Length: 168
Image (tube, rainbow, N blue to C red; front, side):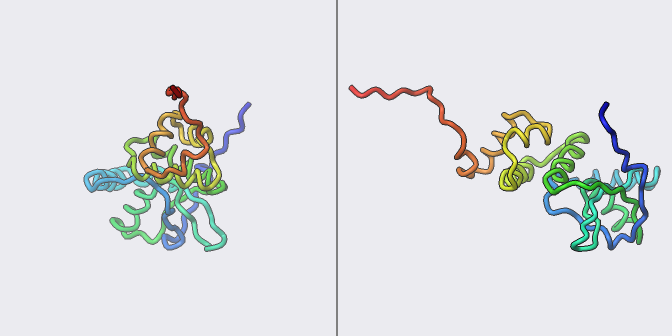
């Protein structure tokens, strides 16, 4: 049996200044959707805590998922507190978690996701790790790598043998 964790069952109410954005989220929300999120929170309240990781080096909770909820609570409602849940994962797993949360909900900015793929490669993940952890096909990973135009991302790939040069 798989052990399922429920960080949502241990929410905390923390001062809003103790929460900060991460520096890798490829998800962007347009103004109309932000206004819809505001309306949703206004009508329903904050139904989901902001998912965070506690970084003891800076004594802050870094957002993994829920940046836009956090922004609405802070900027629209001018709240001095926000509800969070805390996960304890390394940076690669937090990045993957952010993408999984975003992709499970909807639209993604391709160029920013391509940048994240580059970042994960630099942090030690290979195409298979990225494919598995971010819920992509290997072809999607390849296309994102191609989008960046960085040749070094392809240095470990074998070249196609579809062309044979004959010396006459």
